[in-house]
Image (cartoon, rainbow, N blue to C red; front, side, top):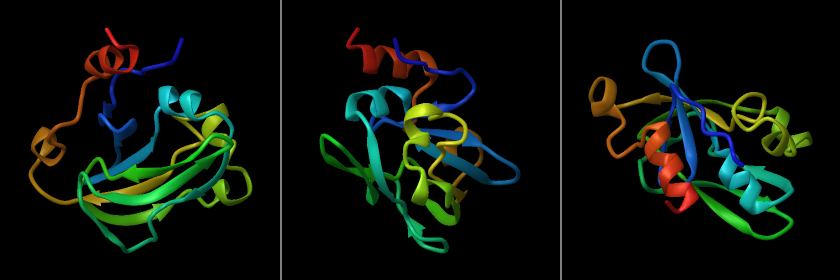
Amino acid sequence: MTETPEGIRYSSDHLWVRAAAGRKAVVGLTDFAQESLGDIVAVDPPAVSVDIAAGQPCGEVESTKSVSDLVAPVSGIVTSVNDALVDQPELINTDPYGEGWLFEVSVTGGEGDEATPGLLSAAEYFKLSSGS
């Protein structure tokens, strides 16, 4: 059974978003997604300082099964990427909500939920990912 932690938001494209200091948010691949993809072998996150738009492809993740787009869950400017994934992409498989995070973004738009329209709660995402 996949893990769906409370206190973070989820996109229907299987990325999670955790609020960080200020208007920043950390983004990662959900446990459901990493489990579905299988062994992650490479990650191509968006570059630092790139402006990303919610709902648009911003990078790729490659597994032993396929290559999948990373679809930005929020709009903003990428402020950092998880450089550890270059040498250890498997961190996404072993710790998707911790050491396997993908990138950090300075979110543009409204405040609170207005800055993250369309994102799901843990319960809503669990229902989506479990097919219930």
